[in-house]
Length: 380
Image (cartoon, rainbow, N blue to C red; front, side, top):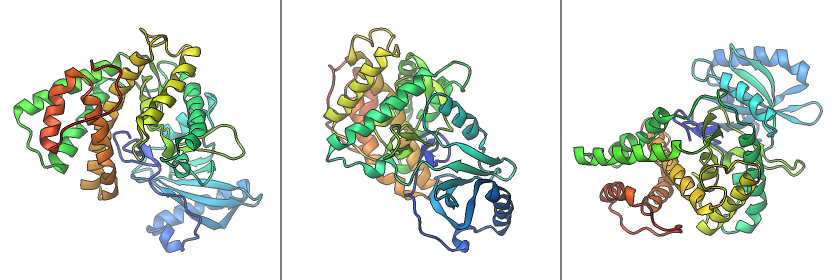
């Protein structure tokens, strides 16, 4: 999740598909609430329909966003389907999507192809990667069936990171990391939990956040999707590569971010044994291609794992704040159902590192909780 309204994959980037695809043909009144927007759409569709062999009568909802972007599905005369992005220009800037889609495809990832873009009106025609996300196919009680999909995801992530170059994407810098961290006290602690943070508490949080940012900025820098998780990955029965969605908030930042995002998901949890297993497999692939050439990462998985934990901690604090904001500010209360997962992630990681002891004490005081358990490569 990234700090802005969520779509198609982003709670604020988190970007993330926030509703399941549907092939039910809705009435026109359900597709368009704004007559002027509807008129603009049909003007655009009239232009692109003959070029791409589209069937206007097949138009239906595909998915929606936590922000202002939504997706429609439409059939083609050749028997395929296409996706239409509806993104009002006054509310959504689609330029990053178009630019980063090209970057992702150049990196060898299977991403939506932009077939037409009306920049002025905010309509886009895209190739369709399918109806079912990776999240739809997963059963948390059966990690063995999930493993092949996670291995496909790892290959896509390695390809993305190998294509990385500085100066292409904005830097995921200290200012952004700390701004995201601040969502936790501002929205989760103060507004959702109703906590009054005194000067001592704020000082403890500030110290912890500075430490978290410093640790994470020390990692090697690569292209970071920022919502690289099953909800934004699209398996295919006919294609060996997994598809990747909702990449428009990508930055150039810590190499630990996307693997932490993949294995510590916003919407489902695995036993830590499975999390470590997949992370080890990523680590083994990454070091073979030179992505682990940093300090002792290439020889010590435990060192890399600790770095992943610190990165996951930053993300979990951010997302807990975003989910609270989506509920309290944006009227989307369903996201708060997943906040206990993040508080568990946060507490478990903070308990493993002595430097985070004061922070954990503040959190436990507000949450009224104690005791944490989980795997660790030595408490440090």
